[in-house]
Amino acid sequence: MDKKEHGIKGIKKPWPTKKAMAQVYELNLWGGGKSNFYSGAGSHHPEIVNPYIEVLTSFLTSFKNPLVVCDLGCGDFNVGKELVRHTKKYVAVDIVPGLIAHNKEKYQEKNLEFHCLDIAVDDLPTGDCALVRQVLQHLSNAEVQRIVGKLTKFKYVVLTEHVPAGDFIPNKEIISGQGIRLKKQSGLNVLAPPFNFKVKEEKQLVAVNLSDGEGVIATTLYTVF
Image 1 (tube, rainbow, N blue to C red):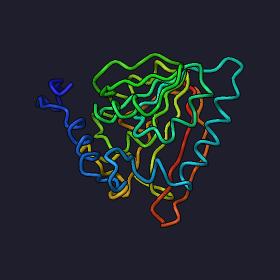
Image 2: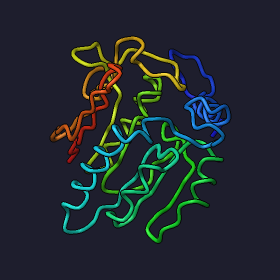
Image 3: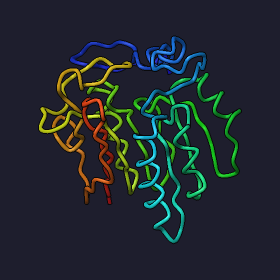
Image 4: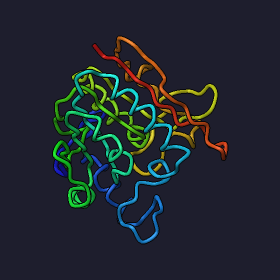
């Protein structure tokens, strides 16, 4: 995956994301103390995690026939582990090899698979529903564009993003890494340019206003077809 290249305005260079995200875990940039695999407060703080698990459980259990779910950017799997039992199959994906190896050892269920993939570069697993939780917010517009183009293969996409409270200019450019667009008073909106994700229906499932005034973590369900 490191050797994959992309072209932006005629310039080719390696995708930086795999190295950047591996560094996040190696240096514990999202906290976690001595743990080398900690995906930050967004995956552990009850204020953020519990409402998400509640609405996702309600959504997943609303189907007579359980869905095949692809978790694109599963992180340390502290959230995903609560959802596996409500699915026919749960395919969890992340870009950091050591993290995936750790998850494979720690979490084992008959209907659970882990794969190390760069979702901007590699083919995505097949499934009914994609979960993309606080992943795209860390990526450049070029990478987001590539991923959004692949999400059309899923009937449902559940997207969670950390965005400013109130109105904001969406989709300002950033360099892929641990930071997000919030510092630029921006956030992702995949329906807006340059992404223009085409969906059949949009429904906000939950929005958590952070107590420190640092924006909103919003989870939206998109029905694609």
